[in-house]
Image (tube, rainbow, N blue to C red; front, side):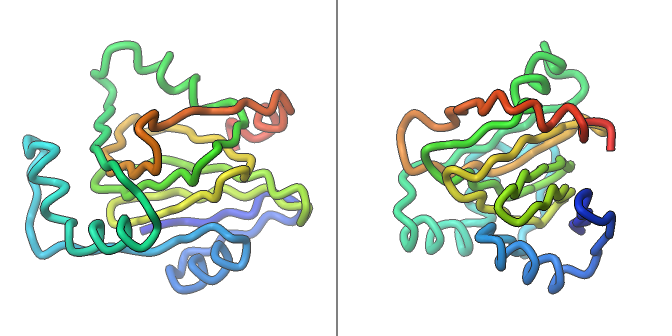
Length: 176
């Protein structure tokens, strides 16, 4: 279950999924929750995971022009976990939407919505779907649990490519 925290201008927490969806969607960030009737195990293959969510995944990809999906699975035992974490911690944007569905684990998206004077954090957990629009300044943190298993959806074969903003905004909020 997601938790939305408004960090600036006034700290506030929202835990009700319908309120989180409304808040995020008003800011152009799609937030939904997807479900599957197929129980999954830690050892399931990428193909099994993608098949379990195909009833949500295939229509979304077709309706929004996505061509590729894969599964990322990082955890505390992943080699170079701190280097992987640091790659996501600097504020960045993308030339395409960043789309993730959390199959297991959790991660924190931070958004610098300067046009609204807001900085927000969205803790995504199992069942949470997010689409960050291209050009939206954000960063991501694997901590504190260091376990994320998520379906990633791409419009281009290149996949995840960050354009770092060099703003330094994230430094104020990393340990929030």
